Length: 486
Image 1: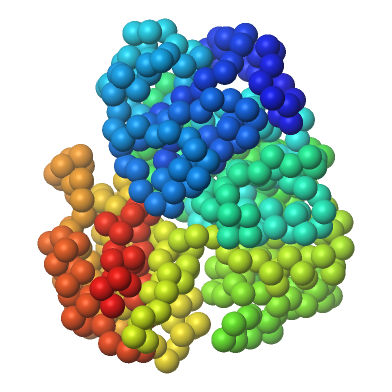
Image 2: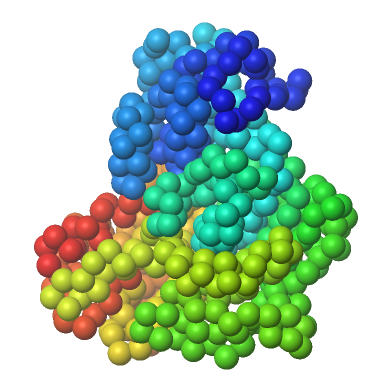
């Protein structure tokens, strides 16, 4: 299927192992449409001329607003009636279970269905060289940065990013250039395909940001996570490249399985590409990137924090592999505007700065807090964290979270929501985390719900403070509510 054309009578390029797709496609329905990737896929399909509808249990900004701008109707909640009129094809998000009423109706009616990564491969990636950004942390920012580098170089990339890059104002693009940039997610594909998403993407080049234990709801241990990444790395085409983070020892232990050349980046001695002379200013960070012993490029960027600088160096190494000109690369790095909900400044009222971030894994929380401490050394930093992800609501990382907030002046932790979905013996405890933080002489407070938390934030914050909200969900819209109240 030519992704630049309108719908035709030809079927998409589907493996025989997948469900049969009808010869004529007009109406495509997406279950779980408000996930970042699913919403972007919906936008791609809409752009290609399909009638697109969707449904989701949790409809909130920014994805709800994004879909509304595209005039894609979204049903609130899952119901059999959402499949009437009957669509030609259904894309099933990985939040959907077999017991979902829509999934049951899907089976009853015998409607053809595929998973998100299968749909992405079939409708958007065919004929493109796949650049996959994989790893436990940093995928979204790195993907968005790579996309902007390619865009500024005039390469007109296609991409699917698990967020909304501010340079594009959309998490997807169907370009005419040869490259497709995609986040390689190790989370499972769908209830009918428990393998990781990234096994569907036929990688040509991979940036591997690191491997840690995560997604405790589907992986029992680090070894099982490593096995998934090992399968993925074996898929890289021999003509391509693996760009691996030397600072992550687990990743470095796995790169030998790749059948392509490997280069490394990072802060550690021995990395092929490294940052030097990093200077963090009020608006920009200045640094040099070296290759071996030689200076490769001088960079000015709005990015800050060691994790983001590392992400930037990986993108520079990719740019050199693609032979992107230095002036174009410098311009892209200087004008990169980041991604929504990644250290995003939501506003400042009464001298109180409000920043929203997606961090939820203990490592991501630690790096985010540290980066903002370095960026704003003179502000009192109040870290407000919602344990919301499937892993963070489990006690898997209970003790590690106590080590993630050292650079904060005050930590505020609410009671997690939806705890009834977690077995009692596996549940995370916000109260226990607060006790552990206090035992380490950190000022920490527990709150039974977000309404009580909101009142406390307004009561305790003062001019000069930085309020850092961290959650992989809407966090009950607290950043906006706080700004409104201020």
